[in-house]
Amino acid sequence: MSQKEEDFYLRLKEELTTSTLWPAEYLYKFIVPSDKDKIAQVQGAFNNMGAVINTKTSSKGKYTSISINVRMKNPDAVIEKYQLVSKVKGVISL
Image 1 (cartoon, rainbow, N blue to C red):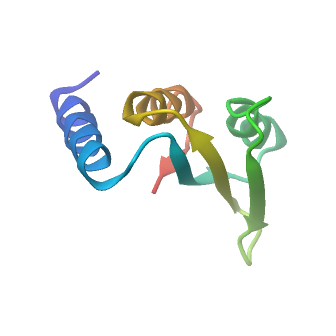
Image 2 (image 1 turned 90 degrees about the vertical axis):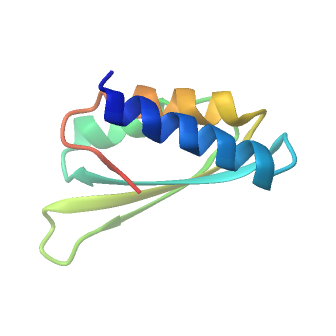
């Protein structure tokens, strides 16, 4: 992991720790190239968690936005999912 990524996750953890009472609902948003396998990989990271997943394809069909609302136990669990999804080629985390 690069220093920039480490700094980002440290800031995110600090923000989540101070702003939220855990466990809590968390909304993830990702942009993924419209490829069934990549969309399935992102969705698969949240299997068996009771997540509510919504997808929307861009007007030209090149990208798909994925919104995932799920109850997470703590900031570390939130960050673990971001790191897992970041391994999908071409994914953008918002």
